[in-house]
Image 1 (spheres, rainbow, N blue to C red):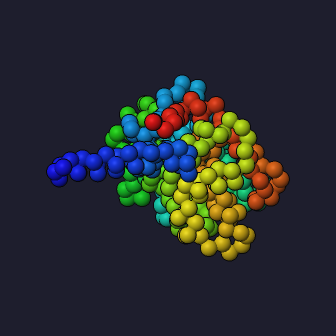
Image 2 (image 1 turned 180 degrees about the vertical axis):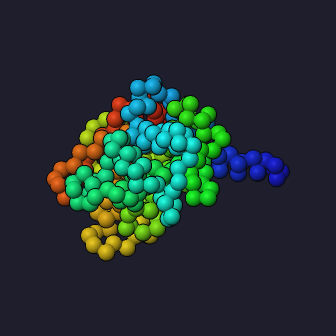
Image 3 (image 1 turned 90 degrees about the horizontal axis):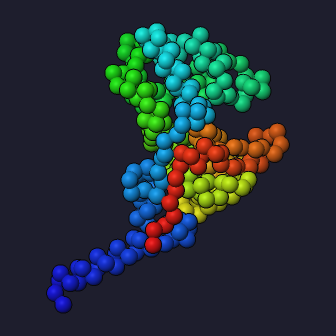
Length: 285
């Protein structure tokens, strides 16, 4: 046996290892998980996005809020930002009053809406239109970029852009106190696979958290709970980032809360929109 034959055998063993089913990855192989993690919606990934009907796109809160804001900017030609680079108060009020996305504290009367940073969802919207390249900021003014009109004319392209921007450019730890770590954001596609597989029944958010951390246990090393157990603390962090501030904003989950406390048990089910938009194929033997 020469070196070429030996290398051929080694390559075959390596290929078999990379394509073997791994239980903690819900049966997906290391190769498939690589695609899920790094090329989530690309051709070779088990997760694919599917075009929706016009009426379905109207069910996606963050898409419609961003479309509304960009149309306001287009109508005005540009928006003069505040000295700190935020949206003017009149625009903040108008955008929030459209009702696409709401804030818990504002709706409960625990805080009042005045400036952009009073509303997490309004602040997020402004951040996303900048990160996605839909707008540019120059001399304290916000305006649309040259290619924005082409994207806005195609709901599917706009949704693809927003999902990609939210998942890969926006820092999911930005609004919470759980520290700078990748919980939820790393492997967000795996969370979609879990929801595709189990989301037809109402299940507690801890069910998904347990499976997520089973697949990515190393993420627990970055947490130092200042209250509660590591298990509950990490599950809450995962739930807030994945369900409340990602999938729900895109209209892909329904969240039922048992109780009125912020730490109340949350039950998750996928929406009809989820199955229309997200197609997950099982492990290929």
